[in-house]
Length: 266
Image (cartoon, rainbow, N blue to C red; front, top):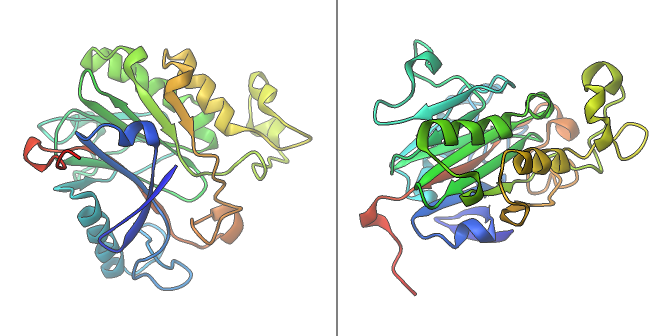
C-alpha cells in the first residue's frame, strides 16, 4: 500500500485504486487526531465511549483529507446487508428512524458521497468499477466473512447497477492477519466448510477467505490486492480490539469525486 499524508492526516491507498483520478480513497492510520486515551487519536466511532465532540472533529479531518462533501456512515451489525446509496440517500428499507443506514456494506454511484466503514481488526474491503463508475465499501468481521458479505456486495453491484464483476478492482485493507486470527472455539463459531482456511491449531486466514469469496463472485484474482497489514501486530498505526479491548475505530473511505474536483493531470 501507498502511505500518503494530506491536511495533516496519514492514510494508506491501494496502488490499483489510486490509478483512477475520478475516485479518492484512504485507510487512515490512528494518528493524528484529537481523541484521548484509550481512543487516541483518530477515532471516528460514536459507539465506543469517546467524547462526541472529539469524534466529530476527527471526522471533519477525514472529510477534509478526502475532499469529501459528505461522509456516509452506517450502523454496522456484523451481517451481510448491503445498503445502496443513491440520490435519495439510501434505500428506505435500510434506514433507521435517524436516517442512518443499517448494514455492513454500502454501494453508490453518486459523486460526493464518500462511504466509510469503521474498523479495529475487521476487514475494510474497498471496491471500484471504472466502467459503471461505482464504488463500494465493506465491513467484514469474522461473522461477515462467514456470511460472505464481500460476495454479496458484488452481487448487489451486478443486480442494481449492471456491473460486470470482471471490471471490479478490490482492496482488502489492514485487519486481523492470519498471524493473530486465533479462534479457540472455532468448531462452534466457524462452519466446517471454512476450516480449509485454518493455518494451524486455531488460527485462520481470513484475508485468503475474502479473496476467494471475491474470486467466486467473479472479480479477477489479479484485480484483488491484500494489504498484508495486521492490526493486532501494528497498534502503533491502527486500532485493534483484540490487542487493546477498549479502543477506537479507524476509518476506511472511498468515494467518487465530482468532475470539478478531479486532481490536475501530472
